[in-house]
Image (cartoon, rainbow, N blue to C red):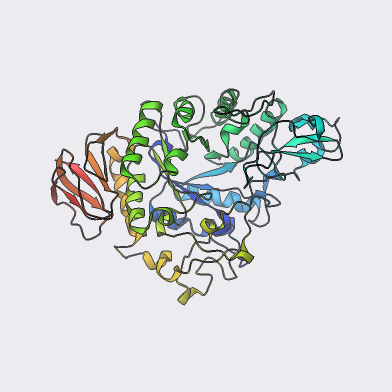
Length: 514
């Protein structure tokens, strides 16, 4: 795939797959790589350009794959290296790019590197992880708190009785942090990237990218300044990762999970043209359903990041409640239009194109340490009335409960239904692909009426979104023809005046200027 004048990731749409819950090829109730490959045509028909797969590497699954015990092999749960190769080849044959998750901040405590590191204080890999002596009284080395501390008090440190030192883990004790201050660590992790790039992977989603820069002095976290992430050392490390990608042809890319809830702190990652290509914006993802809040957030990011930066927008992923659960079914349609029409690269989480909601998980079936099971329920491909209780996801019992709405929301049940969420996503993605202004045009927000978020793209068209459950007048300037509405019955091609146009409850429209 030769590099193009405009990199594919600027105009493309990325679809996130959580492999355990996408499609099961062998009937064991857990999704796998062969299942993903068998369902790639769904993504082609949907109209996306790339697939991002959450981790499928060898792992004890303490954090369902984000605790990697071998970065260069596939966990048997998901298949084999040959299955990974077949998936990449199958994606490329269909014109899709393949993006893999990469977890550089930590490994599993069962990784060979950590087993060596904790064996003795003198092992050559001791410095590959962060080890420190206890403070007086046997206390942890500093006040850093684990991200999986439900009460906010669980230290990011665990005492290893064998060697008498604490090791650092930003997440679970089973996920010890790598020490990126040891030059051998980035060298080894760069080789992991090359392993997958050599196999044809088109890019990486980098897990907690901002966490590979920490205060080497391990200073205590302070109000307004954390020492356990977003340290200045992160930026040259991201530059070095970019250099690895640039060793390869074909617009290989990296998108960072930079979980900073202040856009002023996020903007330097987005502005840097020699680091990450894209940065996920979690301020945007975590907003309440409010037209003024979304407009202010997008406007602020555009101003802070500058015209040279390219945003990456998402409203859902494997860690957050689903869009339809957070905002409601009507707003979810408006959210889809907003996501797929803003300037930047949209990321769509599997099942959002079906309008799935979070699934209630009974206590005896809870498996995740952080309460994320409801958003990770399996995809219903076929109605249970025809495919059985596995709804086309599996011939066995799914590892998490299937949505009780599988009969209505199954992918095959939505095909051909002009009022379905799937049909809306397909229409939006087709329009985006056919419209240069939506893919690459400039952005400018418009003054609009109460509860309406309106903006221009490329000066050629306008998007107006009603966030209210009641009718609202757009109240913006501009006339043109209706290209698409979230309301299926709205006739396309109708001439409209944005100043007087009244949107129905939870309606969004795209209008081409006359």
